[in-house]
Length: 226
Image (cartoon, rainbow, N blue to C red; front, side, top):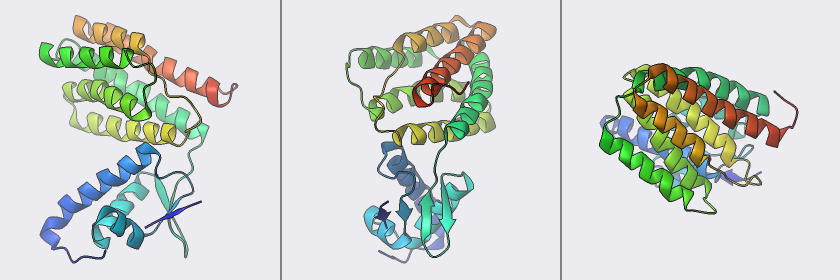
């Protein structure tokens, strides 16, 4: 178990929302990269020093992470990175499957050709990488799923998908013993379905894609839970 804590600079309230958002994204990045792991204790002072921020946006960003269930407060110990069980992970993937399948249906035929070309190029690049890192995978995966969620045209749904996907990646980052992998063929079939303009085909392709991810990870983690 480790402790990570940053200068207490005085920041005007007008700048605080933007600073809080920046600190929040930096903390999310630390979680996704696995620099902050389940059980790690985060103290405001040391984190403020690490991120070169004041303690107020640190406190507010940690409050946001607590509301999302990524950290929790312990009496006299500060804030601790939450444990992440297999059961919770499966629940998240089940909800993602519902939301992202609907997003794919709504996005079918609506992604501009130039954006589709960028995503296919990203898939080709990672296909040529024999040992992609978790960051490499996250970058491509976030590009694809983020584009689909945004194109669906439902702001609330896109926000929920991003939140759940962050939790998925934080969980993956906490399992450093597992070799990162990325289903290039599966994602290519998903893009083909989206590009076809057939909403039902796109919905089914996304549902199958997340089901494949879910079953593969469950097999790796427990070998029994279904």
